[in-house]
Amino acid sequence: MSFDRKIKIAPSILSADFANFGAECEAIEAQGCDWVHVDVMDGHFVPNITFGPATCAAIRPHIKGVMDVHLMIAPVDPYIEAFAHAGADILTAHLEAGPHVHRTLQAIRGAGAKAGLALNPGTPAEAAAELLDMVDLVCVMTVNPGFGGQKFLDMTAKIRRLRAMIGDRPVHIEIDGGVDPGTAPLVARAGADVLVAGSAVFKSGSVASPEVYGRNIRAIREAAEGVYA
Ligand code: DX5
Ligand code: ZN
Image 1 (cartoon, rainbow, N blue to C red):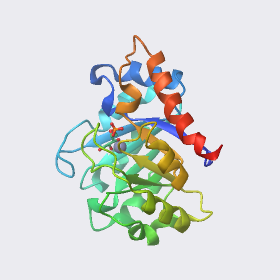
Image 2 (cartoon, rainbow, N blue to C red; image 1 turned 90 degrees about the vertical axis):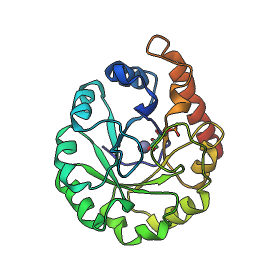
Image 3 (cartoon, rainbow, N blue to C red; image 1 turned 90 degrees about the horizontal axis):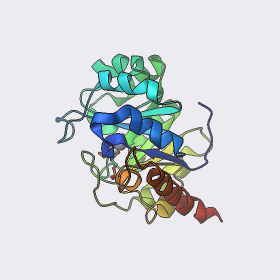
Image 4 (cartoon, rainbow, N blue to C red; image 1 turned 60 degrees about the vertical axis):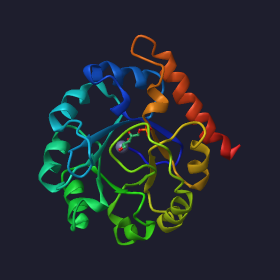
């Protein structure tokens, strides 16, 4: 995985057909997405349950590019090896998931994955200050985690502060929640480069009509890239 700050669209398969993940991942990649975002929820850290490492391992062969795994679980540490073994390129843990996030980030890199740090809407950018040399990505949540299809929360001031704090470190800023062609320019202008989108990519499409996914991905990308024009 090489580093750049070009806009990357990462569809969240939380909005895909759960009975057909393999074909869904192949469809969104064929339609031009950059990364595949995989939301793991435990019914404890967040009020919803999705799936675990076995499902990630089953999906992996259907993804050619980057598998971006967002862990909304607590505790995190006992499961890091399993998710790394399942083939995650990036493992993102929440700062709020436990008292020892520093140890968690060390363990993620130790397991051979890139380390991501997610911040809930109520957590300030400054909470990440001592961790920026040990992460490859900071994920700014623009919804409270747990569900797809929620309303975008404006975190642009926080994204700008984080972008300044990161400076020239090779650290991605990822935005997760409520991203669509209307909100993408706001976060891109503030300094984000990875845009997660669930409902805005999968809406109205299916593996039988994947060109809809392509249109949705392009609409978000063009809206985000338009801010540099
Ligand atoms: C929220 C998840 C997101 C979510 C995004 O807890 O982490 O990845 O699926 O979905 P949309 O784009 O529909 O807000
Ligand atoms: Zn997510």
